Length: 324
Image (cartoon, rainbow, N blue to C red; front, side, top):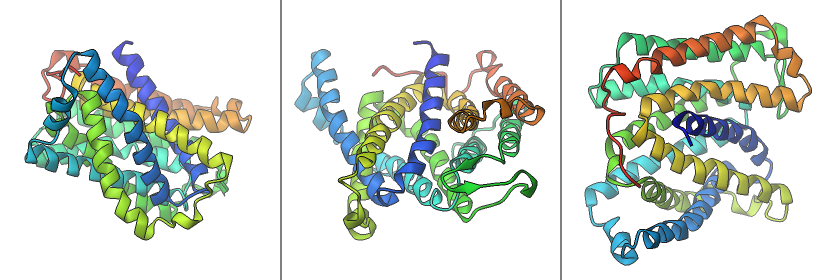
């Protein structure tokens, strides 16, 4: 699979997570859902990791022990997984008082936040044209939002003449976006010592450790709708497709094509959400107007500015790769 197709697959899966997560709040609390999601993903990932070691004719016991020999690495993955856990909980909590479309658009702030974090923490100075691309990408994503204001998602309806309505959940999700940007930058800085499968397993393992005590205290486990088929359909989709697959894809993409390209393709996420929402409401033709198309053009220019000249410069986050 080419790098572009892999990036698009990651973006599509991330977009679907906003839609499915909005349905999940009907069956379980955000903390309970996130805990079960991480725990189930870890249990599925463990045999896959053991099989990969066996296929490579490596000693499985020695490889497993090697994951935990470095205290520094353990600390790094505590931070990496903690930031991601915070994002997922923030997403679910935010969706109780905002829409999937709002969260998908606010999600596009992650690249800009990531640039700031990388500048302060990693001392990386992004070229002006790339910063302009990030800004233009956010503008394009916001244009997509304004172009789809009449859509109703999960009980929220924003009328065309009301303009942008800022929900209380949007404040929560901005904080969640900061945590996700911190997660991506920390993977870029610390995640190169492990392959994609091993790194994803460590994130899920420590994410589970973060979430279990929180779930036991605040997860409202007695309220989980275990007997409802909708619970299992949604949680299995979130676990397999938007946790396992996206974790592994993200680990691999950060190491092979770089964090900049991964963050750049995230600008397409609100477009996929808008298309899905319009299709589910039989309003696909309503997107064929100049505001939505203007947003698409802005996003295209943003992707070119961010990624179009990557091959001409040597950037820290894409100049190395690691084998899984």
